[in-house]
Length: 302
Image (cartoon, rainbow, N blue to C red; front, side):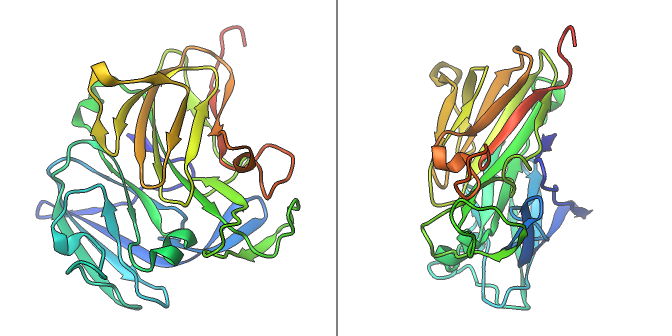
């Protein structure tokens, strides 16, 4: 099963063969570092929103309530859905969701197993940078055979937190400016290092990491101590003969990737964006930002 560190999985109710989910677009106070909160927009109380897990062939109904003071929508990024369900109301017949209203997105999962995202597609210049996005993952039924022992998803986001002087970190609750290109906080699943939760592994396990990016900037994600194989791009599997072995992968905005590696080098290993400014919290010297770790639970001789 997929784990999204620091972010819940969205529950559903099964009725007459249809999986019913509920998403609530609303203002969110998100803690990105201990004692440091941002006022953003998210789903069901979190930024990013809860991860949605489905299977190929599922019939789903996702009711989206709008508790914002502006209209919004949800786009199912990378999914092959009917035009009226695609969530781009300025272009498509898909309706916008006005404040204090809801819309039922109903469709069948016709894509194969893969990593996708959902996010607002109304006034995107503001709403995406306020935090409105989350993971949408189509599970592979064959995973139950135990080929992958641990499966992690990370949403990459960035924010401009207002009223914090450059190079300072002060506890408080801050507004964010979605129109600023002076980004000063970079998050994995809504948190900055050292507030991110490590990926725990055991020696010999095969690990999958899923990455999604709906922000402004591309992020070269680098894994220390291991080489990984890129197994899927934008929710589509890469044929075995075409897979690359790397330790750094550039994840552009709008992209998802799946990577896999074998946990064969015991220790505590960084996994992070390699852009120097993205490894800090408001340009302060200690390691921070879009950074987490792979942590072996037990090493031989320990």
